[in-house]
Image (tube, rainbow, N blue to C red):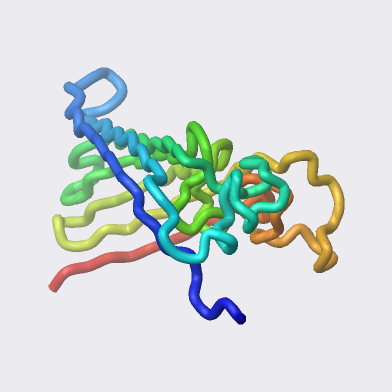
Length: 188
């Protein structure tokens, strides 16, 4: 019999977050700190458990979270720090959004290995943003990645360290792929 459908199951998700306005300081006019922590727990695998890429299941032959196999419990976090400087130029407010998100414990049982939701996988970003006359926003940002590589030092089976290889935790193929973006957003 050929398996034509993937694995299905039940999970419990808990998310808590906070937005904290910070008062004026000698360094910024205003600031906001946003933080979030999330928890996912695998309750059960209800369909095709042999395909499930999780520790203790046949779909995870290495039985190792550091190779991208999901765990029963997963904890992640995110923090955004955004100092602002008001009226730097007439009609222009500047801010410097900086963020980091990552996995603190385990590998997410929801789509493990492909979403980067894993212990030791982090995405970080810093940028400069201009709000022009409350109508247009221009943002220049740098984004980078850091994933645990589980000792990977050479090319995988396909001949390269691709992002979905199963010898690391998270999208480790992105470790050397930081990028810079310039975006313009406007309302009419």
